[in-house]
Length: 122
Image 1 (tube, rainbow, N blue to C red):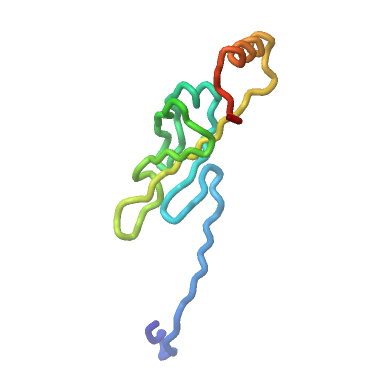
Image 2: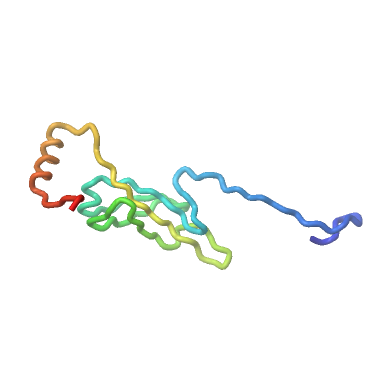
């Protein structure tokens, strides 16, 4: 640094900056990471869902056949960069299985299980 006022010697100022944990996002460099919970039918059929950004909510399309852990990019909705522009919002999907289902829901799931040829262990 430069000389201080009143003839004080030159020195350096060191700052340690810590980011507080955000309730919605994790941070990876200039990108924000958001975990979006999906119903099984949203993952299978595709859907449009609303997700938070630093500027407010945006709608994104969930493609049919989306898997848990799949990353969807929302360009320019991350943290600002020194050189201009912003990082991205990365939406990481997590499929939630319903609990406490009704009898009619159970029957529908059982019917789907009988009709479907899908086996995740094949």
